[in-house]
Length: 345
Picture (cartoon, rainbow, N blue to C red):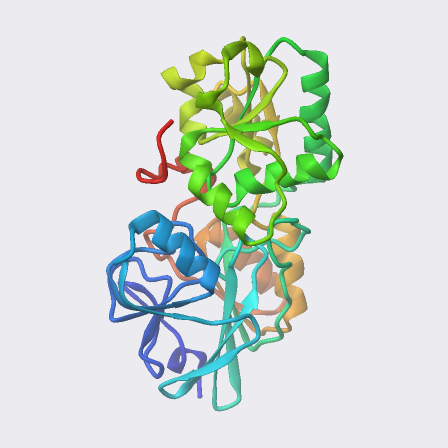
C-alpha cells in the first residue's frame, strides 16, 4: 500500500478515501476529522465532525449548536476504525484540544500534524512525538529566519515595561483562541497577581479555558473598568483592535503584539507595534526540522506556510518531500482573530 492510498490531496483538502473522511477540510464535506478549533481548520457545515471534546466545544462557541449534522468526541490515545482505516488522536501542543491525526492501514502509518508546537504551554497538553512512515507537517514558520527564542523572556520584557511605565496601559494583541490564554497563564507563572483585563471578544473562550481547569487568575472585562484603573494594567485584545477606536479608552497605551511574526521588524512597524513579543503557538524552523527528523518518516508532505524551504531541507536530508499547495489555511496571528459572535468589545 502507498501513502496516497491512505491520504491524498483533493480540492477540499486532505482526504482519506478508504476511511470516508477529510482532515480539516476547506469546504463542507460529509465527514470531517478536525485537528483544532481555529476557524481556518474548523469550519461549520459538515455532515459529521470527529474531534476532541475541547475542539467540539470551541466550535460550538464559535458557530452555535448546529455547526455540524453530528459530532463525535475522541480522546488522546483513543483509536477508532473508520472504513478501512484506524484513526488515533495525539496531542499537538498548539492550543487547548489540538490534535495530530494518525491514520493507519495495512501496516502503514501517516500522521497529519495540523498546527503544532513542541515547547511547553501551560494551557494545553504537550506535543507528543509519533513515529510514522509519512508525516504531514505545517510550515507556517518554515524559513530559517524564524527562531522564536524563549517565550518566558518575552513575558519578562512585557512585565519590565509595565514596571517602567506605571501610568500607561499595556494592550497586548493576541489571537482570542489559545494565544491570549497562554499569555495570561505565562504572566501568572511568574507571580503577577494583579487583575488582567480582556476584550469582550475573548470572554467566552477565556471562561471556557477556566472551566477546563486552566488557572488564569483574576481576568476581567476591560469595558467594566474605569480608565484610571487601567493605568499600569495589562489588557489582552484581538490584534485588529489595537488600531481601533476601542483602544482610545486606555491611558496612553503601550501597543504590544504577541506573535511569531514579530521576529520580522517590518511586521512590527506595519502594525505600529511599540513592544513586539515573539510568542508563537506554531513550531519555528528549529522545531519543524527537529520534529520531522524525530518522527522517523521517510516521506514528508508540507502544507500551509513556507512549503518550499521545508521541502528543500527535507530532500537535503535524504527524505522524499512534496508541497501540498492546499489553499484555504491562514495564520491566525496575522488575521487578527476576528470572531464575530464571541462577545462585545
